[in-house]
Image (cartoon, rainbow, N blue to C red; front, side, top):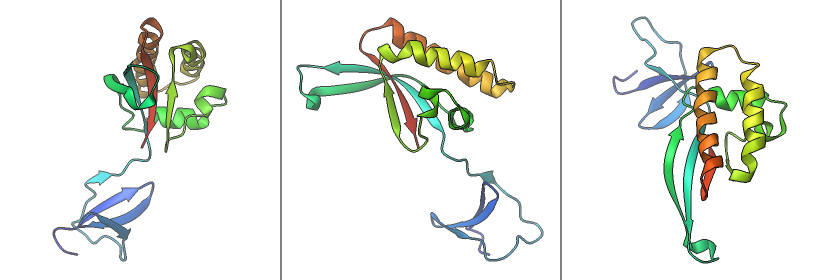
Length: 150
C-alpha cells in the first residue's frame, strides 16, 4: 500500500481511497495501520432561507441562507428515517424538502413528539436547534425551512 492512500470505513465496509476514487480494500490492514476517519452516511441539514421574489416569475426567486443546523452525525436523518410521523417520515436523506411557514405547526408538533421519544443528548440537542429554526420560520414572512439531503 502506497503512503498516499487513505483507508476509510463506511458502515462497516473497508474501502481504499486513491486519488479521490473509492474501491474495496483487496487485503486486510496490516500491523501499524490505523483508521483516520469514518465516512458518514447521508445527513439532512436544516437551512432557514429568506425568500425574495420580485414579480411572479420563478426565475426572479432569490434565496439567502439565514441560519443552518448541520446533521454531520446523521442524527436527524436517522430520526426521520425511523419516524412513523407523516411529515418527518417524508424527509429524504438524498433530496431536498422545502417547508413553508404554513407547514410549521405540524413540523413543530412532530419534532416535539420525537423529542419525547429520544434519550441521547446529541439527538435532543439537534432537535432543539431545528425547533429554534422552525419557530423563527413561523414568526417571519418570507422564510422557508429547507431540509437538505446530501
